[in-house]
Length: 92
Image (cartoon, rainbow, N blue to C red; front, side):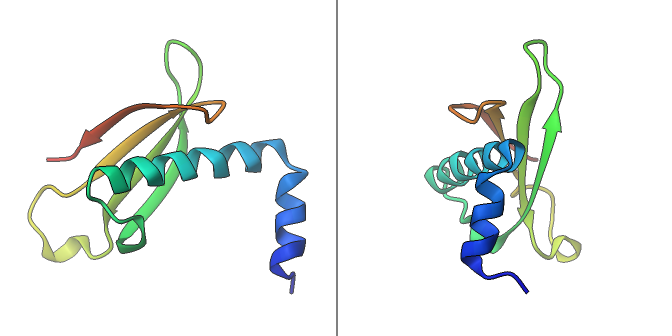
């Protein structure tokens, strides 16, 4: 089993992993600014196409979606280089 240090060293050598991790940090900051605690949410990260090239799409949804009404989802879009949050949307 890898230690945390070994895992971080592996990530640092992988440009895609660094970019994704950086995008997640930005998205988490945006989520917190919009009163959504990432630690309480189900989080999914994916690459989405856009007219200007790929962007990171980070989805925050309730961990237990089976017992809720609509709403409470948060979607954050981050540029591909993970330098800026492009937009934040609320689900209905």
